[in-house]
Length: 431
Ligand code: NAP
Ligand code: HSE
Image (cartoon, rainbow, N blue to C red):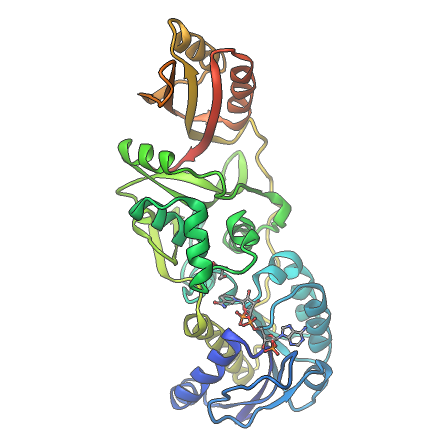
């Protein structure tokens, strides 16, 4: 039986150096659990001249991917370099050479997961990607193993740390969106180009991975409806608090008799909902199983050691499979086709903020439009604005379809007394 497993690392940045550190610090524990020793033979980097702390390991650095993908001594390739097309080519080559893959790359898995799965299946190799969703939270393993006996009908996640940090600071310190984003970048927390985080794309990639696994259906990124947090104002955060809600960027994947839907959008959550108290850069995923009921998984969604913990746990799974001769068997294809709900089948509650002219009959005109589409209200608040002749209206609806709310919005835009439709956000949780 194989006593030492040899690893090739693609990338030696934040996560890659964390992997080396954890393997050094937890070497004995890993050997006890798996019966194998692990050595990292080589690591791919783009700049060989950069100074590195290899934590005493004798890893050789290279800038040629084939030194790893074609090295017959390497059993497992750990991909922590990022990138999509070029990285896909490298990993497919590694799989063709019989290497097992562990990756933290959500962009790659969300876009090319099926292709990588197929290649791994063909070559009877392992493919694991726990770190790709919610960093240090073992959410993929929980869905695939812990809840394997149940039917998951809903998952809601705060799966992007940067946006959760921004929303928390806005709510707790009253700082506007642009200032918090700048602060997060100065702290090195948000990326220099925060587009994928702020516009919801990063969360959408993670939700498409969770939906694929949780519902055993193939989801593409294009199946996810995405709205980011750029338009969030301090007013909406304050009004939401008044109504008993917090505003968070929430990914929701739902499955019922009429079909499935996956979305990422700023949403109002009741203050007592477990996801409402997930603050700063923390992540959490709420999973509803028909048998188990409500569960929630909470922890750090990013960072060197939390993310490396997930990567090394995947590596341990591969080591066990190698020892047991069961590699490639965990790669199960989705069982069902995905039946995405049409707009008239997606029912949610909505929060709407309008600026209207302050004159008799306005409220009547507005409620008339909503009632034409069968929309009724749970709560209504009216506030004065800085302009004496206008008022702000905050409306919270009962369940309404996306189609009806869109039609009502179009009609409202035609009303001369409606000066602005400031926002329409989803409302989650509650009755
Ligand atoms: P990083 O700090 O930027 O490190 C990337 C590493 O890959 C660097 O060592 C870099 O080389 C190397 N690299 C990049 N492109 C390369 C190329 N074309 N050829 C050769 N080497 C290349 O990135 P990271 O934060 O560790 O993230 C790595 C992956 O983990 C990404 O997929 C990311 O989405 C995922 N992830 C990260 C976190 C986190 O908290 N950071 C959390 C979850 C998932 P040089 O060192 O020479 O520049
Ligand atoms: N940019 C991501 C976040 C990193 O803010 O959550 C972890 O995937």
